[in-house]
Image (tube, rainbow, N blue to C red; front, side, top):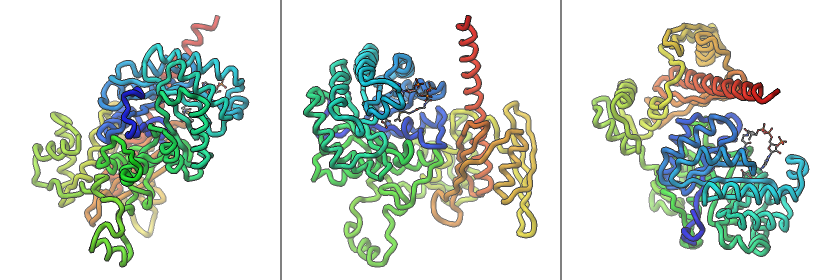
Length: 528
Ligand SMILES: CC(=O)SCCNC(=O)CCNC(=O)[C@H](O)C(C)(C)COP(=O)(O)OP(=O)(O)OC[C@H]1O[C@@H](n2cnc3c(N)ncnc32)[C@H](O)[C@@H]1OP(=O)(O)O
Ligand SMILES: CC(C)C(=O)C(=O)O
């Protein structure tokens, strides 16, 4: 996006769920999961998707490359330190995108320059000049971020920013990397930058705020009022440490108060709830019930006076309509007598196109669920699709399980698991609880010593026959993997999530081992 293309009353939404969001401890998404999230971000109408940090790992590179090739609509950005190698990797991953952007960064605070980079301000100036010019050889759309800007000397930051602009940066992002600033201070900092770096008026000013003091959205909003026309944010506020500004809060703040602020975004707000559920499912990060916009309680009214008011006129206690974020999709969609056409049609309404073998897989699973559950809603279908329709075939599959649970003796589980070579192995274990017994029995069957890091269980919808949705994060030899499972039986849902997480961790471990072997082989070749 060049500054000239931008409507001055539109604030661009730069989503960093797949990059900064994935830096949240324990989150590790594989390529097909990232692609699914990126496709939902495109439906949500975000302007820029930061798809990853290509130099960071072969998996990150592959994900950025896949998203660049397959996701149409938003600009696709890749992050790079201000090093030639990082910028080359970013470009190689992005080159097939219709609208690629290289986002490069270097620290400007003295604490980072001295203690992290062990460098000097002069070096940072030289790196910025060379790095932005290098990125600009590849692509017009270059974003530059002076990392830890809000703890940097404003004069020095302005000097670096002006150099980046002179070398061709079209977006300048001023990050509050450690979530330290306050709204009035950020406003003053940005105002001073406008004075000291006149080129800032010719590019898009962006803000990227972290939530360490709970001010990420307030600071981003202060940035917008000070002139920023791009906000970097993440679904459900995910991100390094306490997270980033939450996308849904920024979008709904500008939409709800549009008449007063005079600014808006291109976001299709009706896709927010679905994006939030998808990201929560795939990352295993639950959304707190009282979270603004997407928390379970955000549109719930508990007390009599409020309920009375809402019944008389919704606007007495609601400033937004639940349908404006897409919370009207829980209507009855299908039942046990529905056929393939109806299923395909219902999935298409959710933006999921399936045919052939994939439709058959989905249909088989749908019938299993519909046999146990009278009404299969759009939200159930969404959960089923996340559980079942991944492009990558899991290395392991849970074929069957038996659990003996009693209040008199510890629960015992037996499981049958299909291994990567297609054979079936069985395992058994007596655990602390039925789910613990199943997890350990799966370890025994697969001979993989996985360590459980996180386990979550939720009901997809309300009612006695609600689908149980589980999410597992585990670690195999220090490599983490996440998985989800869905069933009306929570033990089955837990077992399905566990084997998927195990498959992901084992797959990522083998990619990491191959990369290490390739690096070792390359260093043997170059060492005399
Ligand atoms: C604020 C942010 O969110 S920044 C993005 C953070 N994201 C990540 O770090 C993604 C995951 N990171 C990784 O996989 C790894 O850190 C890698 C692959 C990027 C780098 O790995 P390594 O080469 O082993 O370096 P390591 O991570 O130990 O240290 C970081 C190095 O980058 C340097 N560095 C940090 N920021 C920058 C920058 N913007 N420009 C240039 N160099 C930088 C540090 O000084 C350090 O260099 P040194 O090795 O000469 O001391
Ligand atoms: C790379 C930059 C923008 C970042 O993530 C930060 O400073 O927090």
